Image 1 (tube, helix red, strand yellow):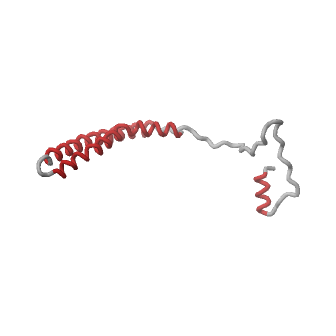
Image 2: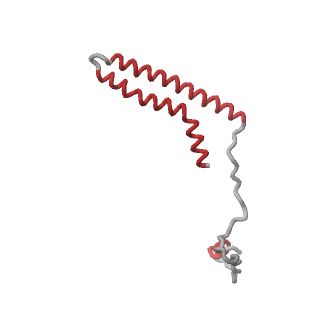
Image 3: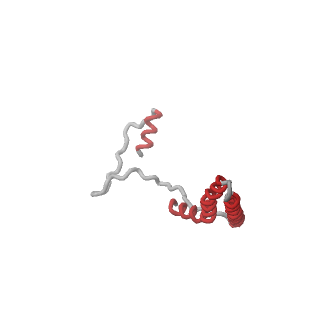
Length: 124
């Protein structure tokens, strides 16, 4: 009888009179903890082909929309810098400060699936 079952019997109050001893470990090896006799299946994630087709299309659509938004964002930053050239220095500075944020957003959209798949491959 395992120690777990014995502790359950003790908790319920229906303890057997004598508990058999655990089998000793082989010579030169540490005594093993009780190992479970069952294993939980852990299959690799696999999406059905119908779902994969839809998700690939959606990711491509989001990437395309993000790249279009990035081009529009850079154009807006350039227009702000052109308008703010004379007598509107704050607008020119806002346009210049928007360029790194726009480039960062476009690069995250372009590299997002690659980064995520790398992180998930390292974690799994």
